[in-house]
Length: 223
Length: 358
Image 1 (cartoon, chains in turn orange, red):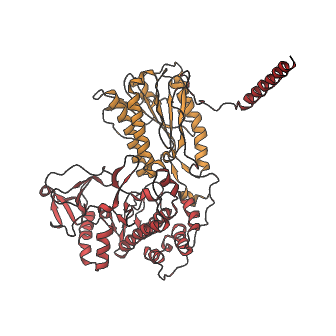
Image 2 (image 1 turned 90 degrees about the vertical axis):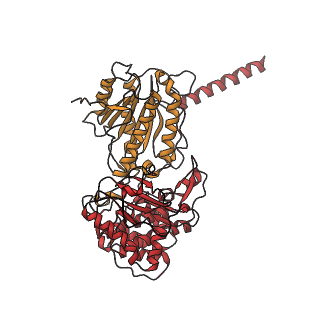
Image 3 (image 1 turned 120 degrees about the vertical axis):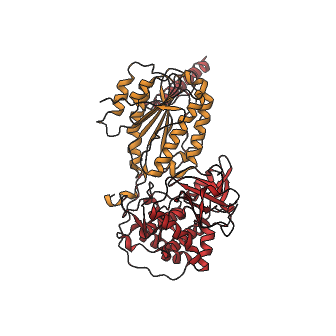
């Protein structure tokens, strides 16, 4: 396709929702599942958002796995129930996101889409339990990688503010304790959804400046 | 609740005279902070802007408010039936901070899965393939029904063009449609500019000849309304797929006029909305020569899954006794399984032979 026809390519923001489902999240399991269902319902019934913000959901605990592969959520009939168990290993999750980006982005391009830089929303309620997570993260966001994602983090419970600030490249939020943890989790997913809706309307990535019940964490840049 | 025919208050009302406003019926988006029912005036809404209108915008709004009174009856009827046209400016401290608009009639509301709450049906719902409706247990709209909705949208665009108004914001979310009579209703008409206005950008609605920083004009509207109608008629959304699917329409004249609008190399060559309307009406029309970009090839891979995408069991692979999805691509073990089955069968046969021999 020539440059003059570039506008004919459907713009697509690949979005990775990476959710901590370790044992400590068990107490929030019900809220997590309810909120994921609502997220799915909203996206599946708003084609203009779901066709722009294609989404993949990745859960992680001791191991990460792909819950939903990168797709327009309209084509996902329903959201599965998430069960929480295991450790909080960040590193393997970052490795999986990196691998999936290398699979998903070429696939979207092959569908004729104009693919924007991916974004990863990272939700956790705990500190990493793996010692070497940082090397996996550096590899994921390495500036030499053309497909490196933007990263937005939401932390609540025992999630360490300092770690959230190091992982985020665009914005980091940590629950300020003004609301319950369940509410904080629900707010985080709504904040992400609002970000996607606003981005779809604005034709650019828009990250909320604030999220109710959260305080912004200063970002710490790796370089 | 539909608005009464005539707004009962003056064409400029002070915010304070409206009394305390109820909660917004719409999330603040675009140029507004919210849209509120007018207390004591069922069927009318107050739209409040993010910031007071500047002199030009306030003057244009006043002009828009006064315009229907000067229109011929047929145009006034279309305004009343198909457009949320501003009827009054809302002022505060001498500044225009919003406007009064009629609420869309109830026929544009319907229930939709999954929650089955009643809501206004955005065109977004209609610009989908038939399969998208059947997946949700809904009867897909017929081509004729899609055509009727598209017709109303083009009629609105043609009316705006007659008065030199530019809408710019044609998209999936700024028009509703009725599942009963298949009419359409365009909202946010208060944002129209005279002859040119801000080029309102949304992903996948870019006019290839109007850079983001340039104002939109009537040719931008021609492109966007043609794209909207083409998406409605075909159920396709990606421009490339829309262009190809137009070839399947039963009316070749409609195919060609829409492709003229979408592929013209010069914006001025895009057919007027009035021409597109004539084609939709089956009336005589004059088709001017248009230099088109070539039809781009279809992408080799389908833009959407041909089957629903299923989620994997959302349980940690580390959890015992639960199915796990491989974290990374793994080797295909089917060959190994086949070999094991063959060995087991051979062992059974040998045992059977031995038993028979004994």
